[in-house]
Image (cartoon, rainbow, N blue to C red; front, top):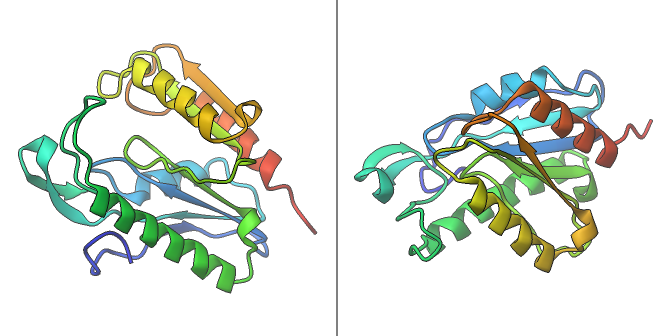
Length: 196
């Protein structure tokens, strides 16, 4: 179900404490798995939301000397003009769509599903009314803050700029922090309030 490797393990899931009326699908970064993010969401969960953290397939990554590791698609380089793995990105998007379709079949309306991710994992859509929270550490040595700023400016041309929030965290490297997770929780809870 994930990427090019059909034997990828089932996603790490934090079930809703009561009937799930909403879902968050969150993609991890390069070389990671969904387990750590499932643990992070378990710490901030809301009782009516199911958190789904899939695992990327293991594949060679050009950027890392073709070493095999969990990756949603190949990464050729980090500069803005680097070639992109268009086929791999499209395949990853299809796999995310399959996860959304499964949750819709489980009874969760598509407008009650949030997509998110870390580093390689973020995704966006063509819906102009989409709400976006983008977070970035100001000391990130892998994905410089400048790239985050460029991304948020590009996002503002694709969706209503008033719906785009960009938060930076002082001293945070290529990781997450408690304040960021609290901001993520507030964002999710605002978009996915309880319905019963």
